[in-house]
Image (cartoon, rainbow, N blue to C red; front, side, top):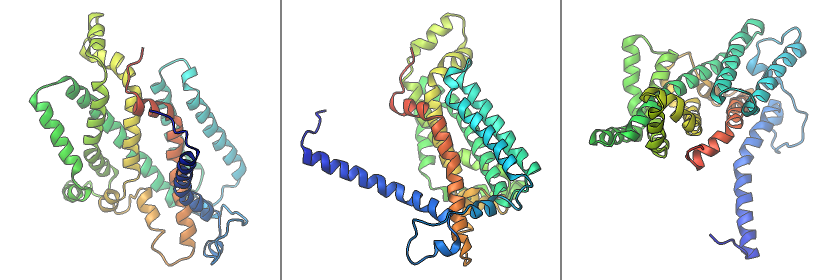
Length: 334
């Protein structure tokens, strides 16, 4: 592909790219600014870009009451978060498998989030955040477990049954969510699982599983059979070759698929709205701030949107290298 040398063409390309970037970033910046305003500032007829920022919206959103020693609690939490972030970014320099290190970080993070309400009087929004974390992690774990096994089997099996399974999975993925949510709503009413996180996880796995199978199968197809054959010659059986040889090679692809599944589960609104009555997730909770007549609801909705975005940004930063490798290469290591 030849480089563009015409200065006018380059200028136009740069203008288009910059315009698109500003168009994409502007809503995020404006929402962040709105979350730091008072309701009077947010409803100002003239948009305010310079103002006295306040974190009252975040405090009202996350806390029922401020702890007696807020600075001490904040410093402890900030220290733990910074420590986990540093470990995550330097996982390649730490002896051991990366997935064990990342798994340990997730476990420690979840335990900390689970223990926070015992020491801090958190608001109801924190409960919805924990619900989103549980639903998302449960959906990703189950989807990847089934998807890896099914994707590997379909990549290695060349019979007509494999083609039929892939076509059926594609057909189910093409169905709108509303076509699946009503049967699961009936199932939840019959089994008593309605308004539980278990039903929501089961439904999200069913909706997202065809995507994970197709995506992981494409990664497995790029791995030569000779690698596992060589492992079995050296003494491995099919199962040990899969876990000890294929999975480490597939790690970038698994991370890429997991992040896409995470985004699909974390941002789902329709399924969570219909299948839950009180055990909401963040997306449903945020929607409750957008339809009221109280002026303060606008700033709370902005603070909730920013708060819900931060965990996804952190996850992307943690796994950005594996995500890029998985999306661009799919190549074999070594």
